[in-house]
Length: 64
Image (cartoon, rainbow, N blue to C red; front, side, top):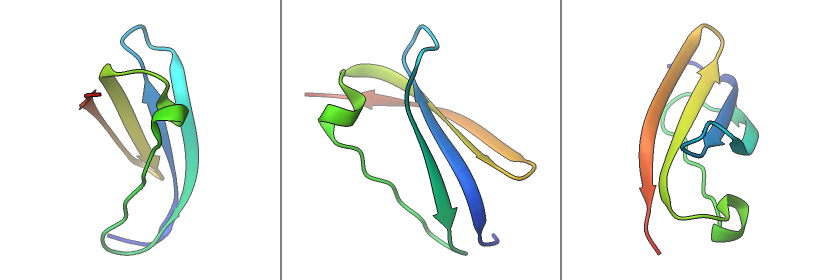
């Protein structure tokens, strides 16, 4: 609920880091767009958002 820097990491199912982005988030809603070239794969991927003491991990599915 506060502005600050954050790190978003995207992993494949083996745990390999595919993309890591540093973000300067604003208070409220923030979004990040990835291209298929950045991710380089389709299927199940996982992402982790870290900001200060907050950490969240979720699953996403990329469909071509």
